[in-house]
Amino acid sequence: MNRVIDDLIASAKSLADKAGKATDKAVEYSKLKYQSVQLAGELRDLYGKLGNAVYTMVKSDFDNKDLMDSIISEIDHVKETLEHLEGKLAEFRNSVICPACGAVNDKDACYCNKCGNKFAPKAEEAPCCCEKAEEKKDGTCTEEPCCCDSGASAEESASCCEGGKKEEGCCGCSEEDKAE
Figure: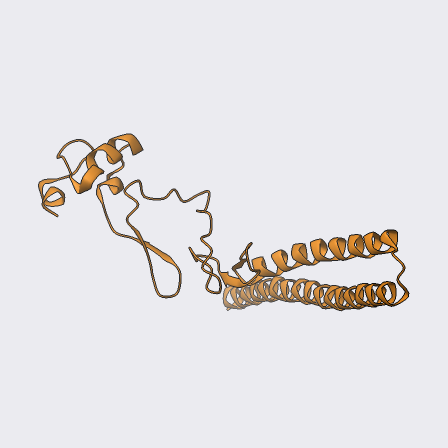
C-alpha cells in the first residue's frame, strides 16, 4: 500500500514540475509579447514625431538634418529591437519570420505564405542532390524517394541521377529503382 502511495506522490511531483515548466514558458512568452507591444507603440510615436518634424520643417522652410537623423536613428534602433523580440516570439510559436516581408510562417515552410520568398534550407537538412523536392499546399517540403536515400555520397548520387538515369550499383540503386 505504501508503494502505491509513493508512486502516486512521485507522479504528482512529476506532473507539478511539468506544469511549472509550462507556466514558466507562458510567463516568458507573455513578457516578450508585452515588450513587443510596448516597442510597437514607441515605434508608432517615433513615426509621428518624424512626420511632425518633417511637416514643421517644410512649413517653416527650415532644414534640420540633425533632428531628422536623430529621429531616424531612434526608429532604426527600436525596429531592430522589435525584430529581435519577434524572432524570439516566433521560436515560442514554432514558426519562422520571413526576412523579406516579415510574415509569420510554419517552421517547416520552404516558401513564405505571403510573399513567396524561398527560405534557406535548414542547416541540419541537406537538400536532395536530385532536387526532387516538391512543395505541399501548406508550404512545407516533401521529397520523393530517390537513389540518394541509399546512403551514397553526394557525388555518387548526383552522377547516377543525372538526366533522370539511374545506373545500378553506383549508389546502391536496385533494378526496381532503375526501372522507375
